[in-house]
Image (tube, rainbow, N blue to C red):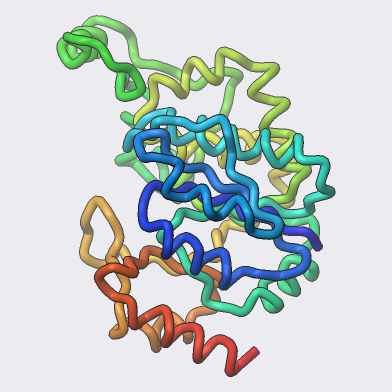
Length: 283
C-alpha cells in the first residue's frame, strides 16, 4: 500500500520536517507544496530526504480563494506524473500531525483499499450557510482595483449562480484521504469540464466543496466514506480550529482518527513529544 502524503505548507520548516519524520515508512512518499508567498529556500533541505518531492509548480495561496484548489491540483498532477504506483493520496497541511504510527496508518488503508475518506454535508439541507458561497459571485481569487465594488454590483444585478453540469453540491472539510483512482478521475473531470473550473473560481472557499462534489456526483459515490479521519476542535466557534496543546493529549489519543490539526511547534512544542511517546508505545 503506497501512500502519497500531499502536504500544503507555508511556514515552520522544522515542524514540517517532524511531520515527515512521523510518517516515515518504506511505502510512504511525500509531495510538498510550499506556498509561493514564502521563500522555497527555507524548505530546500527537505529535497535531499528519501522519497520527498518538492512540487515545482507553486501557487500563491490566499484564504478562501481557488488558489488553494489549484495548489492541491498541482500536487495531484505531480503525484500522477511521478511514475510511482501510488494507491492512496492523503492531503495534509503542514500544521497536521498523526495520531497513529505510520505502520498503523498503512495497515488501515490496506484494509480499506477502495474507500475514499472525506467529510461532506448536503448543501443547503445540512450546511445552509455554505449556499451563498456558490450562488453569489466571489472575486476572492482575483486581484485588481475596484473588485469589491464590482463584486457588489454583480451580486445585485446578476441572477443567482447555479451549479454547472447538474452537480449536486456537497462539502465541508478540505482534508481528505482518497484513492489514486479518484484523484485521476478528478483531474480528468476538470480537464474535460472547463466550465466547472470557471464556476469554482468565482466560489468562496471552493476547496471545501469541489472535490467532494465531483466524486459524489460520479460512480465513486458508493465508495465514499463520510469521515475524513481527522480530529479537529471547532468547539470555540471561530473561523479557525483550536490550536491543540498538552491539555488535549488524552482526547487525541482516545480518538479513532488517524490525524489531527492544528498544531504549532513554536507555541506548544511539548505536545509532539507527548504524542510520539504514547503512539509508539502502543504500536
